[in-house]
Length: 110
Ligand code: FES
Image: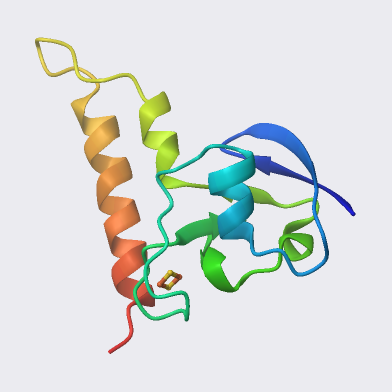
């Protein structure tokens, strides 16, 4: 079954069986290995991605559930220009890291 969506701003289409978890599509098909496998049961957050801005456990998300949606992974940080020698660009990188950490904490099991 073909599923079309966006990842880190790029349109993608994957053909996977129903129920294939988004985590494995990101890592194995799209080679976005920043998203990790940890517990596999929505407890650790290692697989966290944003789906239309909402923190989502990709280890629990069937790929067909993200059809037409926008996924952001931690790999997006590689697309941000690193700070130059004068520190320009550092604020953008720090903001992205803080936002990711906040969203992971928000989803953490207490
Ligand atoms: S792998 Fe631990 S929450 Fe998904």
